Amino acid sequence: MAPRTSGSGQQMEQKIQSLKRNMEKIRMDQQGIREEQTRVKQRFAIVKQQCEECREEINLISREATMTQLRVGLIFQIMRARKDGNFSKAHYLTRFLRFIV
Image: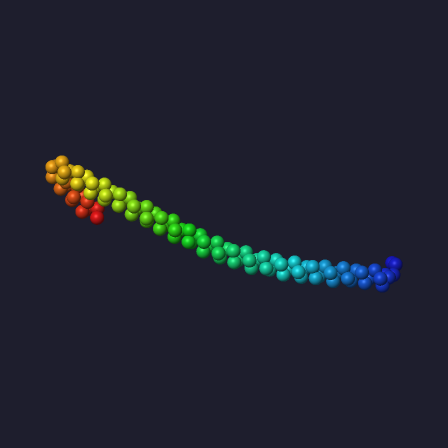
């Protein structure tokens, strides 16, 4: 076996030390990435929950708007029935309006 020269041994040692520093830097970078992924997942969960709350609120507003349209339509029918003198229809529609309110 040929004896090592001190110059190539030092170069090898420097390369090893350089690789160790690079590996440590990579390890720290990976840890930072994992921490950021955790924060992003938490923020995503919050945004997802807020989205669901908004969707529920939109559905509620939509149902309320539909009920308001129904009530206004009944009121106009009641007014038309009274104007036309059809009091039995007006009475029926008024009872129905009271029922849904």
